[in-house]
Image 1 (cartoon, rainbow, N blue to C red):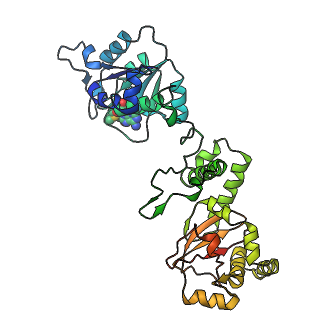
Image 2: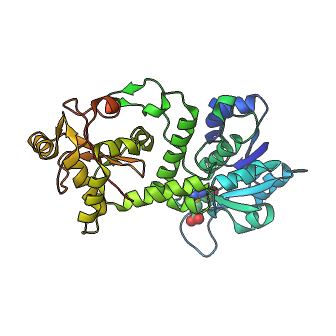
Image 3: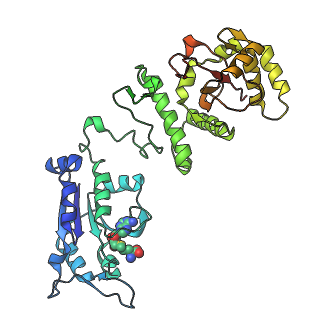
Length: 369
Ligand SMILES: C[S@@+](CC[C@H](N)C(=O)[O-])C[C@H]1O[C@@H](n2cnc3c(N)ncnc32)[C@H](O)[C@@H]1O
């Protein structure tokens, strides 16, 4: 890939192009970046490259002559796309970056001041590209953004360890959270699932995280992302869970896998669950089931009313709210106000999931079905 940058300030680009992955790619000949100083082509006797705008207005406009001459003098036989970096342009995204990476070469024209005489753009530019809806002082940062993003897609530029395949946008979704050693940092543990070596679970967890983050932060991406049936089912569950309006921070979904439905059933007999649903005439059925789970649950071997009394006497600092069918887990404040409070506990099964201040774990079951 050959990239030719036309700028009044080539020195602004050099440091970026000599470092790290870009520097290595250029050194290894995978990427060729040539910087052209537009000023060297001006025919003005004072070496000026800009002038006042016709029609008045603030600032200066870059003159057409040096730009057109600079580009024409250096693009004989060039086949590729000629781009002017401009806030008016098509807004750059990963799809456009992929388009650009398929070109044989790129010309990148960096504007400065108030911009560029339109006739230069008409003469030597194919397209205007913007790197975002804000205004920079010059196109140099924009050119670097384009070079960097395109370079990553040039075969060989990224080492095998740095594959772009899973990255945000490449999959149509935002990327899942990443972790590296140590497994615990300032009391924050790496999600359990990433440590157990089960690659199917890890892949599933990462996909769920990508879907969740994309839904939260960039839901519009879901309209065009390639989704499987399983993705769509997961999104439906996530949307339903969001609609529940439960206070608290959501935890990693995969943790919930460790709470099979049978486990909930063991604590909450079917009769109890059915009763709960009947009782729940308020329309918040999950709350009704929660109440039942509480009264039937165990705390340190206590059941029913005694369990509830024990819980009330010493509420946990936080509880996990588990949605069995949904596979969702929420961290909720201990003071969560819900009708009836009993929590299912099982120290053996839950040891790895939550460290409550008193060493006990508290769970509430909610039925969304
Ligand atoms: C101050 S800007 C000129 C803005 C211009 N007067 C306008 O309102 O569209 C100077 C130069 O910075 C570059 N630039 C500014 N914002 C940009 C953006 N969002 N994307 C790409 N290039 C940008 C362009 O090359 C532009 O010619």
